[in-house]
Length: 318
Image (cartoon, rainbow, N blue to C red; front, side, top):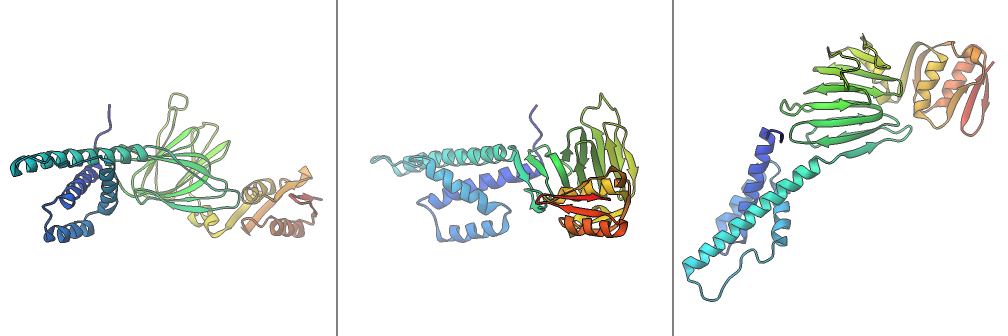
């Protein structure tokens, strides 16, 4: 069943039709001086008008002999033929513009960051997405929904409200659905997290037959899902889980092994624990993302550890 036409899509269709009509008026031999001023006013006051008129111009130029003349017809015959041809050409323009728009909007667009890189995007509906380090996602917009596939990494979403088109983010096993909301999704190989800052999101598995649950998060809550188990909900400080936007990581009593795994996401210079006996040491503090060497030196000083440095690896040992 085809998706229902939204109010935004209807406005787009109307504007495309108006663009085609304006094209026909401007190409007509009967154009008057006031036509130009009215056209400029339409451009200035109609959303998407310039883009759609530009597309109409391109399509018009692709239509061969859109308006043909014959040597002998009467004035009324000529006007009738020209009107028919103009209407037909305008109809073609509308179909091509809208067909192209919806075909393009339904095509996935990939975005990716490398290790240590962050990137902020503004999507077609004015939603904003900030990608953290080593993140890859695809964006697919259609007339019925806005769909994000988060393949890996972490992203903060600021969703423009559109009740007719839910904003859906999927990882490998989980689906998050929102309307006008600010939330963060992180997808690692064995764990997925959703943190909600404002608005409302629904979390449920992509395959409800395996782990049948669904839950609504409240602002300030974070859901953590491991190995398709029922989510665990906590309420961490928002400035801690978004510290990466300030190029910081905040640790509060995590193990050295956990801290290193987190820091290694942001740097090609990897830290390793050469002595398993120190992996459970506790780490607390604020550290800079991408500065693996400074972290290793601080931990070595606090716990009396040794550092062995190579081109790509820093080893911590007793």
